[in-house]
Length: 229
Image 1 (cartoon, rainbow, N blue to C red):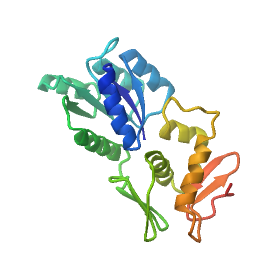
Image 2: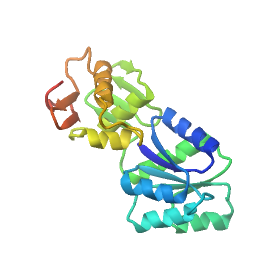
Image 3: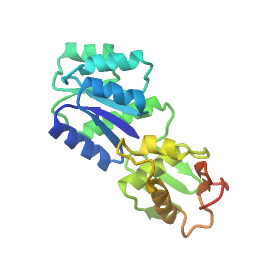
Image 4: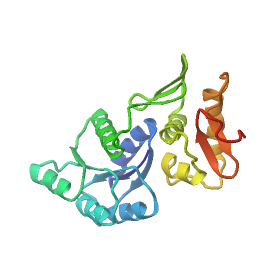
């Protein structure tokens, strides 16, 4: 999942972004309201975290303009201004949830998971494709009776594939949701991570799950979805 974080305090932004990246989220950071609106206009995000007290345009105004532009992804307001009137104002601007500073990072993660579940409606906590099991709550993965250990980025890529099981996903879509704005479109990093996943997910099993459509993208499927590179 790709997240846009609006936070003007570098120390706080670094703390939140680092924690989210450790949980397999791709994170872009905006330091002011105008920057956040620019990011949201050129990138596709799964969730927004907006601090209220930021330069240019505050979080309330950013939230209001995002909704006016047709952005429907979940918005979580994050701020030290946690008075009832501020919470009501944030929700009336179009936010989906509100958490005050200081906060427990576990609560932030739980609220994000709840918003993402709501956004995806019937998205289950446990995803299965054939004998592959992906638990989106604790990020554990197994195939058959074998536990599979993945890095944060490997897990993020596998979850992305699993949520779109049976569907062709291209490199551009993968880059938009699994990597952040620092992704180099001319690099082969996606191919490298797909090879790593294949080695962990498919090697030693009779039936491969990760398939390649040359020049098009990848498919996670129990059926023969295409050529393996």
